[in-house]
Length: 116
Length: 113
Image: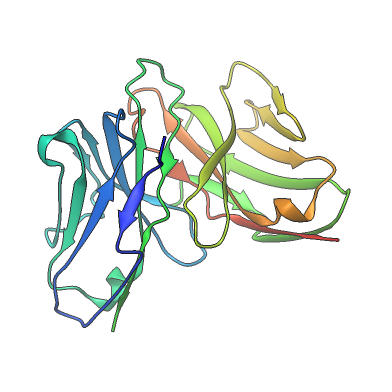
C-alpha cells in the first residue's frame, strides 16, 4: 500500500490558463473520487469514478472542469480557463469495492492550486 | 447549504484533557458518520466511524457519541496529546448515494503541552 499519489503538489497559474492534475490511486482500488477543499472548509465532493466510468458529477463541477480515468487506473482533473475562484486544494481519494456500505476513503495529500 | 454543521471552529485543550467536537445534521437519510483527521499538508485520514444503529463507538482514546433523535454526533478525544493537534472533520453519507460524503467545516484542535 503505497498510498494515493497526487501531482503536482503545488500549481501556480495565471487566470485564463488551463491546468491538469494527476491522481494515482491505491492500485487495487476500483473507486476514485475528486474533492475540493478551500481554506477553513471541509472537502466538497466533485466527482466519482468506478473503474473507468464517471458515475457522478457535482453541480459544483462547471463545464470548465473535466475528469477522466482511462483504463480505470490513474485519473486526471483538468480545469480550463482558470478563474481566481478555482484556487483551492484539490484532493483525490480512492476506496476498494468491498460491497459494504462502510466506505473508507484514502486521501492523497492534494494539489494546491493558486490562480493569480 | 451545509449538510453537516460542525462546532467549534477551533479548540485549545491542555495535555491530558478531553477534546469534544460536535456535529449536527438535518438529513435523516444519512446512515454513516465518519470522522477524519487532517494534518497540515496532508489529506484527511479516517479516524473512526459510526452507524446510527449504535449510540457510541470507542476506539482507543477516540469515542463517537451519536444521538439519533437530536440528529447530533460528537467526537471525544480522551487524554488529549500534543500529537492530536490537527484539524478534525465530521462527515455523513446516505445509504442511497453511498459514494458521496458531506463534510463539516472542520475544527482545528491545538493540544498544549
